[in-house]
Length: 338
Ligand code: KG4
Ligand code: ZN
Image (cartoon, rainbow, N blue to C red):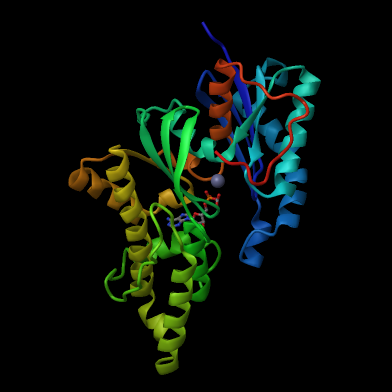
């Protein structure tokens, strides 16, 4: 019987993360969030890479300790090769290469976007794995993609954003409204108390299965500027309704594209991932889709939806089974594609 221990390392953006996996199950999943970016209202790349450098060894140490194993028990090191911020990726990549070299064990490079999708394959009680073929929609502060998945490593991007990511649409709208960063969770909370039809924002016209969110942000900005001219307290007086209307618009953009993707491919298994999948509106819309369109939908455990190393470890595990290893000349790649 197999007895495989994989260390996953993730450092593509502003979270330094390490996880230990044993035969597809997670033993530890450690994340050091970088609070420093909050005061800037967004991720500052230079600060992110410095923080990774400080955090990476302690985070890996903690992951091993929590898993109750020593580094000598590891079978392979999996790390995020890209896509992401170059300075951030370099820290995880260099560390993973050094550790694999020191331990003389295989090194496995992982595409972060495949990680978000294959997080659904982590063995976790109470969570079902989507059967192939399925459609994966990855929605976060950095990504918005619809991917057709035919097997673990046969994936095709069939739609993606041409400008901002959906999480940015939440965060930038929140900034216009004077909310803190990231604003997604607060917009979600307020949306539950507001009327989603109170204000109407036009949805962008984008070809096929692609997305665009920058126009929405501008539309919201002009709307707020215009309304506050007549009533300086407009935002305060209508905050819940504004949040509900913004969330309603964003979710209908996502669901419209999912409907089209499902229709074009004939695939009704739909899996989501990324930080925005925490949103209560998208979760409800997916449930509605099960009744309305006959979908079966999959949402991973919350800690596997935001950036994490467990999703890197599962890809490492699957690649380990295929003996798909990287050599020591592997390099980080900021624009790595699926
Ligand atoms: O995956 P994630 O933690 O980091 C990356 O961007 O990779 O996603 C963070 C994004 C932020 O834009 C945040 O505002 C958004 O996810 N987010 C939400 C919710 N929770 C987090 N957006 C809408 N509703 C939420 N409940
Ligand atoms: Zn991500």
